[in-house]
Image 1 (cartoon, rainbow over the protein chains, first blue to last red):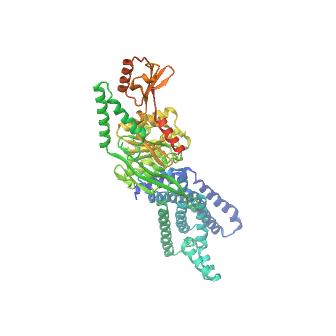
Image 2 (cartoon, each protein chain N blue to C red):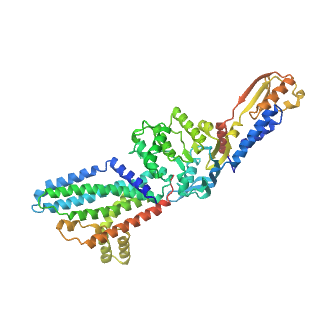
Length: 257
Length: 357
């Protein structure tokens, strides 16, 4: 695997998202933030900071998810359908290198977007009196990890199924990933042995995205332990690696014509 | 070119016909020089190293939920010598693109062996020496031509000044220097084809695989591409191209393979196609009763005003001998007609054969 190939592919993917105006979504974030400040603040006397933090962090996840679902899930498939992939793989570029480059390119887009949104968000908190706390950065970091895992899932689905199905499945990973604790508990408490097995399987076969959710803690000013952040980092990177390895395995057997 | 499979009747027939004609008479120096040239060519052919070796290549596809089998190609074998242009021609769906995709490992062949420049085609280094233009050259529309070429150059491990020089060189080669900074979504199909050709030329590859390189080009563009390919050949580059445009192939190719229904049904060299030309001599008959005509006129076809004599190969020595015989037997020659049986006739004959069978 060549680092220069990965870099070239990643930068090309990043440039594609920039020129396809994906960054306009940052404007949507700004709009949401301003709306939250203007509309909700007068209604929530004394809790303005909490509302802003809650809405701002949720908007970051939502916008990041939109990018991953609509860009990430069609990323590889679109190139397969159009045929651009053929000229790349006819060069001395490995298929796994190609996938890693595409994945890192979109992750660079997500990082840049989250960086800009975090900056805007920090400014908004700073301007509103008594609401600024740098702890929101921990939530942004874990949101980035969560989106990285979903991006890897999108790349995996995009090597197996059509763009539409890949988008649906990627969205499914997000939903099930946030409900996996509840699904396992529901299986244990309500179902029979079969339901319990199924719910346990779902729990272990999908990433538990609640591991990255510290947004509530940030909003309420709770302490976030360094251990928790460290374990979430290991967990996120582990899932990302597994999904990318699976994607590489499927894609290396894929017939292109 | 060494062709390990069915070379077909017109190939060997044309060649042996010419050899037989040479012994019939005429100036000894011409006969000798022609024979020597033919020998030299075949010896050269035997000793030239191979750029591409394809043996028994087969590929089927599976489609749908029931994994229905779709035949791609079967038992395709051919070799391409270094420094020659080999053309694959055939109808839509004949298997040209599937063959090329198998060569480049874009799909896994079910059977067969492929060696590119002496190395197994699965080796990544073998592909580093190959330039490829796909049939439908869709590229990243968000990039300009120059940006696209820089991107592909990086995938070939080019960088810095070397990359800049190479990009400028290939842009000039395909006549896209002035339009190099326009986004690909804003340029015409012909220009896109030129950019596709430029990316194939990056890194100065030893072997070029071009799938329909003339597609979408206007007549001037086609001529420019033909000249470019000839120039590349003169600089020792090997070219495998597939095309529907038979006249272009005829003008360019040193050897041709005709695909039909996923099989390579005929392959022949340029001189064998040229050997498909013939002479028709129209002369006055030596008498009214054919029974009393000289024996050498046995094959002649009677016409209203005399006889027509066909020389199956474009051999001037045989023609001279025939004209001399006519003169000796008092037969006035009315006209000598040259008839060309070119690649298109050969291609159509192969296709008709397929339709009949």
